[in-house]
Image (cartoon, rainbow over all chains, first blue to last red; front, side, top):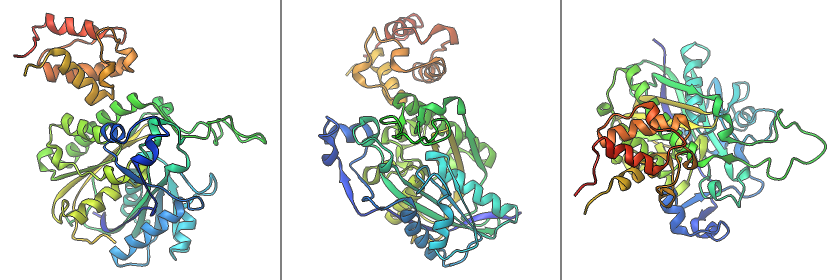
Length: 332
Length: 82
């Protein structure tokens, strides 16, 4: 059976670092309060003029180098912060990477975007549409977050991560799957940007104040993230015929350190099995899982041969999980 | 050090439901802590595991107060430790 095999990994964050101290006063709080509530100490943000595609190109280049290839048949870009509402950001990224003429499209599943992108890329390979796919998760939430909103301004950071998938065999290290993906649109309003789409259509007038900012209903999102990520992990393990004890590392969306702790508790798994880099990058939305993978691979926390569960939860609402044996690759 | 049922209840609400510790007061309703009916079902699941007692769907509602949940747990034999 043709299966997608992960064979390259690359990430990039913009150079500007914003520590808690730089935003605490404006939000009327302290550095320690932010760290205690979220586990975040600093995040990276883009300077004006830098956009999501710039981050995606940097991460994409590194992933291609890590996979030792300069050709793919498709580029899937997971993002909630495209360069423009139209067209998709992926074709421009493909062009700048020298991947002209390859299939290129965006996927929007907010913070679950990378998992949805992986599943889309794996599907293109399984269906024989592509031999090799570049999957990128890139977001610049600093461009849509209200800088004065305590619930979001301290949480989000910018970044990008990418992997190369190639056609291979289900028993190879790096083989992806099965997947568990799901959504619940009844709660679409819990995480959103109200304006800029067809619901609040463009007019010649500016959008109402704040309507172009990202909003999130904190408590409801907190608990749904815990329950859905734990539930999705259990579903994907059932499909894979695996047990929680078979998993060496959980690399789940770095939404908030307390959410990661909640998922570990709910699954009855030691917190040490859960990879964390949220203290240095914050919540980077679609880039979060590949950034955590790179951080863990570089620190030695994640080693070839270990069985890894990837999981995420985000706006939509959406969630997703998959499992793989970590391949012997060097992050680019 | 003894752990009270209120402390254990508070840990559940803070750890799984994103509630701030200072919000967990006897008079706070579950609705005021942003727990809707689905949130109550999830709360009951976690509380059953934590306290080792069965909680039926209609025993806690979003309108119930933290004090009502404590009374319910006490009626089911859950006591403060130590």
